[in-house]
Amino acid sequence: MKMNHLIKGSLSVRRWHSTHMPKRLKFCMLGALIFAGCDKDLALPGHANKAEKGQDASTSADEYFHMAVLPDTQYYTDPDGTHGGTMQMLTNQLDWIVANKTALEIKYVAHVGDITDNGDRPGHDYEWVNASSQLNRLFTANIPFGLAVGNHDQWCFGDPGSGATNDGYGTYFGKSKFTGKSWYGGAYGSSDNNDNHYDLFTEDGINYLVLYIEFNQQGYAPGSGDCAGQQHYSSTIETNVKNWANGIIAANSGRKVIIVSHSILNPHTTSDATHNAKHRALVGQGPDNLPGTFTTQGQYIYDNIAKPNQNVFMMLSGHVTGEGYRVETQNGHTVKVFLSDYQDRPYGGNGYMRIMKFNKTLNTINVRSIQPLPGANGEELDLDSKFTVSMF
Image (cartoon, rainbow, N blue to C red; front, side, top):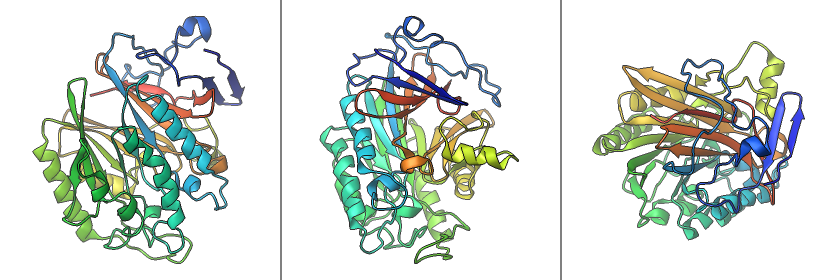
């Protein structure tokens, strides 16, 4: 394994090969011999749990699997936009996932929303064609996956109402596309609408439920375009989806639940505007995993769905550029919340994505932010990009 180490200011990126790694091989293979300090523990500032550290301490005998988390891909599926993204970046991500399915035991893929940039906006069907051309490869590879509905997947933006996703998300990733798949559990409502749905899978003797909740955020109003200034939040849909979600979770009380919704967490911010700007746009320049804050919809989902259900242990989101992490514990019930969104970085995100290693043996989740590339991949090493937390 050949590695190059690049350091620029507080930026730290490692190039690493993984496509042909044998099963159960550690990411830092023989790290002490190949990369000095590979297994060094890194403390996480702002978190009291001393078991949470920066490196993966697993061995080849451990029971584990990987989940891939795709962030906002809107500037890849709309390469004609002004953000510099390309379809090749999304292709690289899917190439990597499919190629490493067996070697890394990738058992599930979650997309946190904003699959496209313009949703059902007339004249932008090509964005859904682009998205499906790559994401449908997961069907072919038989890798279970689900996709959240982001505000940019709706038209008008932020509208959870009937018809806002029919021609795009509903056509290319509607209920009928997943019905009959072994992992697909079902969706809210009786139509083909799949905006709120759930998946089921089992790994290493643990049963999981992944619950997707569409974008529906009080106070959100798009800032530009044909729908600028319009607020489409629906309290009726919010209440109905909450009741549906709680019913699904209650009916699956023996499963560990992961909630995926586009808008849940903001990255940590400081009084230093320059620092915050770097956190949004530059690799490895965030506040190194200090706790983020809930968005309006994130607070609602936590208070009304995650907190009341003891089997909910994780939440995943995008929407707000940056990397973020938060731990909520109420009455002994802990929920870990993750944000990964790179869209405001150069080239619309530059192809970065998340991988999460669920290690049953160590009861840990190892988080990495990687940039799949032909040959050697990029990996961020700062503390809000690479860290390990307890699993449950």
